[in-house]
Image (cartoon, rainbow, N blue to C red; front, side):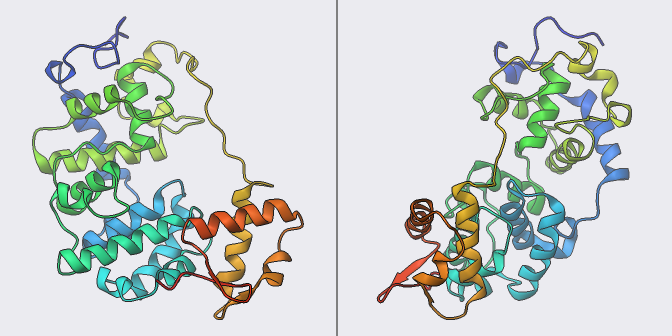
Length: 311
Protein backbone atom coordinates (compact mmCIF):
# COMPACT_ATOMS: atom_id res chain seq x y z
CA UNK A 1 0.00 0.00 0.00
CA UNK A 2 1.31 3.48 -0.83
CA UNK A 3 0.35 6.75 0.75
CA UNK A 4 -2.63 8.20 -1.10
CA UNK A 5 -2.31 11.60 -2.71
CA UNK A 6 -5.81 12.38 -1.53
CA UNK A 7 -7.04 10.68 1.66
CA UNK A 8 -9.94 8.42 0.67
CA UNK A 9 -11.75 9.15 3.94
CA UNK A 10 -10.53 12.66 4.64
CA UNK A 11 -12.37 15.98 4.74
CA UNK A 12 -12.15 16.30 0.94
CA UNK A 13 -13.65 12.91 0.27
CA UNK A 14 -17.09 12.68 -1.29
CA UNK A 15 -19.69 10.17 -0.18
CA UNK A 16 -17.45 8.72 2.48
CA UNK A 17 -19.91 5.97 3.35
CA UNK A 18 -19.59 4.66 -0.22
CA UNK A 19 -15.80 4.35 -0.06
CA UNK A 20 -13.82 1.20 0.62
CA UNK A 21 -14.62 -0.19 4.07
CA UNK A 22 -12.06 -0.75 6.79
CA UNK A 23 -11.78 -4.54 6.62
CA UNK A 24 -8.00 -4.53 6.12
CA UNK A 25 -7.67 -2.80 9.49
CA UNK A 26 -10.20 -4.77 11.52
CA UNK A 27 -8.56 -8.17 11.92
CA UNK A 28 -5.01 -7.03 12.76
CA UNK A 29 -6.21 -4.47 15.30
CA UNK A 30 -8.70 -6.82 16.94
CA UNK A 31 -6.17 -9.66 17.01
CA UNK A 32 -3.66 -7.31 18.64
CA UNK A 33 -6.29 -6.29 21.19
CA UNK A 34 -7.09 -9.92 22.01
CA UNK A 35 -3.44 -10.41 22.94
CA UNK A 36 -2.50 -7.08 24.50
CA UNK A 37 -5.64 -5.54 26.03
CA UNK A 38 -5.27 -4.44 29.63
CA UNK A 39 -7.32 -6.27 32.22
CA UNK A 40 -9.42 -3.35 33.43
CA UNK A 41 -12.35 -3.82 35.81
CA UNK A 42 -14.89 -2.11 33.56
CA UNK A 43 -14.07 -4.58 30.80
CA UNK A 44 -15.00 -7.58 32.90
CA UNK A 45 -18.48 -9.09 32.51
CA UNK A 46 -19.37 -8.42 36.14
CA UNK A 47 -18.94 -4.67 35.62
CA UNK A 48 -22.26 -4.48 33.81
CA UNK A 49 -23.60 -1.40 32.07
CA UNK A 50 -23.43 0.73 35.22
CA UNK A 51 -19.74 -0.09 35.67
CA UNK A 52 -19.08 0.83 32.05
CA UNK A 53 -20.96 4.12 32.45
CA UNK A 54 -19.09 5.04 35.62
CA UNK A 55 -15.76 4.33 33.93
CA UNK A 56 -16.64 6.46 30.92
CA UNK A 57 -17.45 9.45 33.12
CA UNK A 58 -14.26 9.03 35.13
CA UNK A 59 -11.93 8.43 32.19
CA UNK A 60 -12.76 11.70 30.43
CA UNK A 61 -9.49 13.67 30.51
CA UNK A 62 -8.16 11.47 33.32
CA UNK A 63 -5.59 8.64 33.01
CA UNK A 64 -6.45 5.07 33.93
CA UNK A 65 -4.03 4.83 36.86
CA UNK A 66 -5.79 7.71 38.64
CA UNK A 67 -9.24 6.37 37.87
CA UNK A 68 -8.75 2.79 39.08
CA UNK A 69 -8.81 3.30 42.89
CA UNK A 70 -11.70 5.80 42.76
CA UNK A 71 -13.67 3.56 40.39
CA UNK A 72 -13.33 0.55 42.68
CA UNK A 73 -14.36 2.53 45.77
CA UNK A 74 -17.29 4.06 43.87
CA UNK A 75 -18.68 0.71 42.70
CA UNK A 76 -18.21 -0.82 46.14
CA UNK A 77 -20.28 1.98 47.65
CA UNK A 78 -22.78 2.43 44.83
CA UNK A 79 -23.06 -0.86 42.90
CA UNK A 80 -26.28 0.26 41.18
CA UNK A 81 -27.56 3.62 39.91
CA UNK A 82 -30.31 3.64 42.56
CA UNK A 83 -27.68 3.45 45.31
CA UNK A 84 -26.05 6.65 44.07
CA UNK A 85 -29.38 8.33 43.36
CA UNK A 86 -30.40 7.85 46.99
CA UNK A 87 -27.45 9.96 48.18
CA UNK A 88 -27.06 13.74 48.11
CA UNK A 89 -25.16 14.99 45.04
CA UNK A 90 -22.50 16.37 47.35
CA UNK A 91 -21.57 12.81 48.32
CA UNK A 92 -20.76 12.11 44.67
CA UNK A 93 -18.52 15.18 44.64
CA UNK A 94 -16.87 14.03 47.86
CA UNK A 95 -16.22 10.52 46.52
CA UNK A 96 -14.87 11.94 43.27
CA UNK A 97 -11.78 12.95 45.21
CA UNK A 98 -8.96 14.39 43.14
CA UNK A 99 -10.00 13.06 39.74
CA UNK A 100 -10.51 16.60 38.49
CA UNK A 101 -13.34 18.20 36.54
CA UNK A 102 -15.76 17.45 39.43
CA UNK A 103 -18.83 18.56 37.48
CA UNK A 104 -18.61 15.05 36.03
CA UNK A 105 -19.57 13.75 39.48
CA UNK A 106 -22.72 15.88 39.50
CA UNK A 107 -23.60 14.75 35.99
CA UNK A 108 -23.11 11.11 36.89
CA UNK A 109 -25.33 11.59 39.92
CA UNK A 110 -27.96 13.23 37.73
CA UNK A 111 -27.79 10.34 35.28
CA UNK A 112 -28.21 7.87 38.16
CA UNK A 113 -31.33 9.70 39.35
CA UNK A 114 -32.79 9.68 35.83
CA UNK A 115 -31.98 5.98 35.34
CA UNK A 116 -33.71 5.19 38.63
CA UNK A 117 -36.78 7.28 37.84
CA UNK A 118 -37.19 6.50 34.12
CA UNK A 119 -35.74 3.02 33.68
CA UNK A 120 -36.33 1.18 36.94
CA UNK A 121 -32.69 1.47 37.96
CA UNK A 122 -31.25 -0.30 34.91
CA UNK A 123 -28.96 1.53 32.49
CA UNK A 124 -30.91 1.58 29.21
CA UNK A 125 -29.51 -0.24 26.19
CA UNK A 126 -31.20 2.01 23.64
CA UNK A 127 -28.83 4.64 22.26
CA UNK A 128 -31.50 7.34 22.12
CA UNK A 129 -32.52 6.69 25.72
CA UNK A 130 -28.89 6.87 26.81
CA UNK A 131 -28.47 10.15 24.95
CA UNK A 132 -31.55 11.56 26.70
CA UNK A 133 -29.98 11.07 30.15
CA UNK A 134 -28.57 14.21 31.79
CA UNK A 135 -24.84 14.56 31.38
CA UNK A 136 -24.65 12.02 28.54
CA UNK A 137 -23.30 13.19 25.20
CA UNK A 138 -22.87 11.39 21.90
CA UNK A 139 -19.56 9.84 22.85
CA UNK A 140 -20.71 8.43 26.20
CA UNK A 141 -23.98 7.12 24.77
CA UNK A 142 -22.14 5.34 21.97
CA UNK A 143 -19.49 3.98 24.35
CA UNK A 144 -22.02 2.52 26.80
CA UNK A 145 -24.16 1.05 24.02
CA UNK A 146 -21.07 -0.47 22.41
CA UNK A 147 -19.01 -1.64 25.39
CA UNK A 148 -21.87 -2.67 27.68
CA UNK A 149 -24.38 -3.96 25.15
CA UNK A 150 -22.26 -4.97 22.14
CA UNK A 151 -24.01 -2.63 19.73
CA UNK A 152 -22.71 -1.12 16.50
CA UNK A 153 -21.78 2.51 17.07
CA UNK A 154 -18.89 4.78 16.15
CA UNK A 155 -17.05 5.50 19.41
CA UNK A 156 -14.79 8.49 18.90
CA UNK A 157 -12.55 9.43 21.79
CA UNK A 158 -9.20 11.21 21.50
CA UNK A 159 -7.27 7.95 21.11
CA UNK A 160 -9.51 6.61 18.33
CA UNK A 161 -9.46 9.92 16.51
CA UNK A 162 -5.65 9.93 16.56
CA UNK A 163 -5.44 6.36 15.24
CA UNK A 164 -7.82 7.15 12.39
CA UNK A 165 -6.07 10.43 11.58
CA UNK A 166 -2.72 8.70 11.22
CA UNK A 167 -3.65 5.34 9.77
CA UNK A 168 -6.25 6.55 7.27
CA UNK A 169 -5.95 10.27 6.58
CA UNK A 170 -2.17 10.56 6.97
CA UNK A 171 -2.24 13.36 9.54
CA UNK A 172 -0.22 13.33 12.74
CA UNK A 173 -3.11 14.61 14.84
CA UNK A 174 -6.86 14.97 14.41
CA UNK A 175 -8.50 18.41 14.56
CA UNK A 176 -8.85 20.02 17.98
CA UNK A 177 -12.60 19.38 17.93
CA UNK A 178 -14.38 16.39 16.40
CA UNK A 179 -15.57 17.17 12.87
CA UNK A 180 -18.36 15.82 10.70
CA UNK A 181 -15.72 14.31 8.42
CA UNK A 182 -14.29 12.33 11.33
CA UNK A 183 -17.73 11.01 12.20
CA UNK A 184 -18.30 9.95 8.60
CA UNK A 185 -14.92 8.24 8.57
CA UNK A 186 -15.67 6.39 11.81
CA UNK A 187 -18.99 5.17 10.45
CA UNK A 188 -17.36 4.09 7.19
CA UNK A 189 -14.77 2.05 9.10
CA UNK A 190 -17.31 0.25 11.30
CA UNK A 191 -17.56 -3.51 10.76
CA UNK A 192 -21.04 -4.58 9.67
CA UNK A 193 -21.43 -7.17 12.42
CA UNK A 194 -22.44 -5.57 15.73
CA UNK A 195 -20.26 -7.75 17.95
CA UNK A 196 -17.22 -7.17 15.74
CA UNK A 197 -17.97 -3.44 15.63
CA UNK A 198 -18.03 -3.29 19.43
CA UNK A 199 -14.73 -5.16 19.59
CA UNK A 200 -13.26 -2.85 16.95
CA UNK A 201 -14.29 0.19 19.00
CA UNK A 202 -12.51 -1.10 22.09
CA UNK A 203 -9.48 -2.31 20.12
CA UNK A 204 -8.88 0.92 18.21
CA UNK A 205 -9.20 2.87 21.47
CA UNK A 206 -6.65 0.64 23.19
CA UNK A 207 -4.29 0.93 20.25
CA UNK A 208 -4.32 4.70 20.59
CA UNK A 209 -3.82 4.49 24.35
CA UNK A 210 -0.90 2.05 24.31
CA UNK A 211 0.84 2.23 20.91
CA UNK A 212 -0.31 5.11 18.71
CA UNK A 213 0.14 7.64 21.49
CA UNK A 214 0.24 11.40 21.15
CA UNK A 215 4.01 11.41 21.73
CA UNK A 216 6.62 8.73 21.14
CA UNK A 217 4.37 6.45 19.10
CA UNK A 218 5.60 2.85 18.93
CA UNK A 219 5.19 2.05 15.24
CA UNK A 220 7.33 -1.09 15.60
CA UNK A 221 4.58 -2.53 17.85
CA UNK A 222 1.65 -1.38 15.73
CA UNK A 223 -0.34 -4.12 13.96
CA UNK A 224 -1.26 -1.80 11.10
CA UNK A 225 2.06 0.03 10.64
CA UNK A 226 2.42 -1.41 7.15
CA UNK A 227 -0.88 0.24 6.16
CA UNK A 228 -0.52 3.52 8.07
CA UNK A 229 -0.85 6.47 5.70
CA UNK A 230 1.03 8.81 8.05
CA UNK A 231 4.02 6.47 8.47
CA UNK A 232 4.15 5.70 4.76
CA UNK A 233 4.16 9.42 4.00
CA UNK A 234 7.26 9.87 6.18
CA UNK A 235 5.39 11.06 9.27
CA UNK A 236 4.80 14.67 8.14
CA UNK A 237 4.63 17.11 11.04
CA UNK A 238 1.33 18.52 12.16
CA UNK A 239 0.46 21.60 10.10
CA UNK A 240 -2.90 22.51 11.61
CA UNK A 241 -3.78 24.80 14.52
CA UNK A 242 -1.39 24.52 17.48
CA UNK A 243 -2.17 21.71 19.89
CA UNK A 244 -3.75 23.07 23.04
CA UNK A 245 -1.66 22.41 26.11
CA UNK A 246 -3.13 22.17 29.59
CA UNK A 247 -1.77 24.16 32.48
CA UNK A 248 -2.81 23.83 36.10
CA UNK A 249 -0.50 25.66 38.52
CA UNK A 250 -1.86 29.05 39.42
CA UNK A 251 -5.08 28.67 37.45
CA UNK A 252 -8.66 28.99 38.67
CA UNK A 253 -8.85 25.20 38.33
CA UNK A 254 -6.18 24.82 40.98
CA UNK A 255 -7.97 27.24 43.29
CA UNK A 256 -11.28 25.45 42.77
CA UNK A 257 -9.58 22.16 43.57
CA UNK A 258 -8.19 23.49 46.83
CA UNK A 259 -11.53 24.95 47.89
CA UNK A 260 -13.33 21.70 47.10
CA UNK A 261 -10.71 19.71 49.02
CA UNK A 262 -11.60 21.62 52.19
CA UNK A 263 -15.31 20.91 51.70
CA UNK A 264 -14.75 17.23 50.84
CA UNK A 265 -12.82 16.67 54.04
CA UNK A 266 -15.41 18.44 56.19
CA UNK A 267 -18.66 16.80 57.26
CA UNK A 268 -20.22 20.00 58.53
CA UNK A 269 -20.63 23.42 56.90
CA UNK A 270 -17.35 25.30 56.53
CA UNK A 271 -16.90 29.01 57.41
CA UNK A 272 -15.55 31.45 54.86
CA UNK A 273 -12.36 31.87 56.89
CA UNK A 274 -11.44 28.21 56.37
CA UNK A 275 -11.74 28.66 52.62
CA UNK A 276 -9.80 31.92 52.66
CA UNK A 277 -6.76 30.13 54.07
CA UNK A 278 -6.24 27.88 51.05
CA UNK A 279 -5.39 30.63 48.53
CA UNK A 280 -3.62 33.90 49.11
CA UNK A 281 -5.07 35.99 46.26
CA UNK A 282 -8.56 37.20 47.29
CA UNK A 283 -9.91 38.18 43.86
CA UNK A 284 -9.02 34.86 42.24
CA UNK A 285 -10.23 32.96 45.30
CA UNK A 286 -13.59 34.74 45.23
CA UNK A 287 -13.93 34.13 41.49
CA UNK A 288 -13.20 30.43 41.92
CA UNK A 289 -15.69 30.11 44.79
CA UNK A 290 -18.37 31.95 42.81
CA UNK A 291 -17.76 29.57 39.91
CA UNK A 292 -18.15 26.54 42.16
CA UNK A 293 -21.44 27.90 43.46
CA UNK A 294 -22.66 28.68 39.93
CA UNK A 295 -21.75 25.14 38.82
CA UNK A 296 -23.75 23.61 41.67
CA UNK A 297 -20.66 22.10 43.28
CA UNK A 298 -20.84 24.26 46.41
CA UNK A 299 -23.92 25.35 48.34
CA UNK A 300 -23.77 28.66 50.24
CA UNK A 301 -25.61 28.86 53.57
CA UNK A 302 -26.61 31.76 55.82
CA UNK A 303 -23.90 33.08 58.08
CA UNK A 304 -21.09 32.78 55.53
CA UNK A 305 -21.00 29.00 55.61
CA UNK A 306 -20.50 26.62 52.68
CA UNK A 307 -20.99 22.91 52.07
CA UNK A 308 -21.17 20.37 49.28
CA UNK A 309 -24.61 20.32 47.61
CA UNK A 310 -27.41 18.44 49.35
CA UNK A 311 -30.08 18.76 46.64
